[in-house]
Amino acid sequence: MADWRERKKALTRQRLQEQALRLFVEHGYEATTVARIAAAAGVSHMTFFRYFPTKEDVVLSDSYDPLLVAAIRARPATEGPVTRIHGAVRDGLGVIYAADRDALLERVRLALRTPALRARLWENQFATRDLLAEAVSEGAPTFGTRVLASVCLAALTSALEEWVADDGAAELPDLIDDAFRALADGRST
Amino acid sequence: MADWRERKKALTRQRLQEQALRLFVEHGYEATTVARIAAAAGVSHMTFFRYFPTKEDVVLSDSYDPLLVAAIRARPATEGPVTRIHGAVRDGLGVIYAADRDALLERVRLALRTPALRARLWENQFATRDLLAEAVSEGAPTFGTRVLASVCLAALTSALEEWVADDGAAELPDLIDDAFRALADGRST
DNA sequence: TCAGAAGATGTTAGTCACTAACATCGTAGC
DNA sequence: GCTACGATGTTAGTGACTAACATCTTCTGA
Image (cartoon, rainbow over all chains, first blue to last red; front, side, top):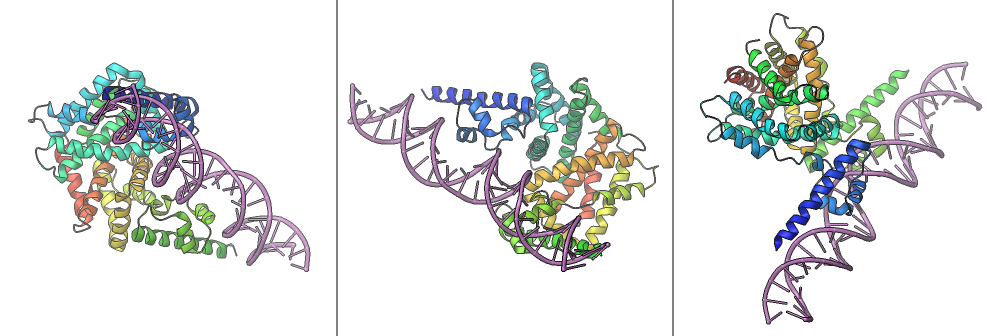
């Protein structure tokens, strides 16, 4: 049974992530050392780094990217790139949003308010953008497609910022629609 | 004469920056320690940190932001936000480009190819975006304005990436125009 | 069933970015 | 010349992250 190993590893990973999130929210990101997270999860600090390459990854290792790509592929190719990405983002995030609104808000808030995490988040967008560009273009993405993918992610990020700015008072899907509407309306301005 | 002091400080700062850039290009960013940069500039490693708060800042402490804001203000307010930002970016960067093309290419290449620097660059865009949003909107910027400012910066960044991707073969101002054209053409597609 | 392979974890000792406290030393003004 | 000040150096830390090696558990094959 290699399953036993896998399950135990998954549990350790989850425990590390939970304790990290808890301590970050409780004492702040910078004030929480990796050693302390590891201790709270009952492992040594070396084990932490075997599960997460950096302290940042314990917050940012989501895997929404494949979900997004799938959501794009599910949309009719007759739509333009922006519309497709808009729809995919709204639907894809909508699922997570409906299931886990509070957890999502907490994580996004932490990520957007901690400089070190915010920097890494942007860095991640780099990779996400390439995936999006490839997903909306059959074959090799052009410069124009990459620009549009970047631009859509910028709009999405603005929506997320707005969401945490007033502490989740508004509905995220609405903000996403607002952001893409602003993008479309700004066309000839 | 407090001038003497100021001049000496400016020289030290410049020497640190020059040596840092040289060593980064020569041996890579990660492989170059702050201590080594300081030694090359003839100061102790503590002095380095008195001039630059982090190792990243020695590369990224440009001050193009005020220049950009001024360029926006110089444009007629009758233009829409995107057009204004586009023009300002092209003109503002055009000046630096004409004066120092090679140095700019080297710095942008280093910044976009080093993960740590790339992350910080994105983080800087955060601040730039707020300045842009404020500059194009008389008074408090709206959500829509912030979205457009983000989006313009995303387009600009794509142009810079494309520029370094083929090692500066194309002309940066042309790429910027291309990026904004892609933005305008694809916005509602 | 038992010996050893394989994989996960702990321990220890390091490197490097960055900080704080204090000493030093040259210059500036009296 | 004496003193106050500003820039610099020194030293001793902290904390993220790495590498080398020991240990312990689980799985495998005779």
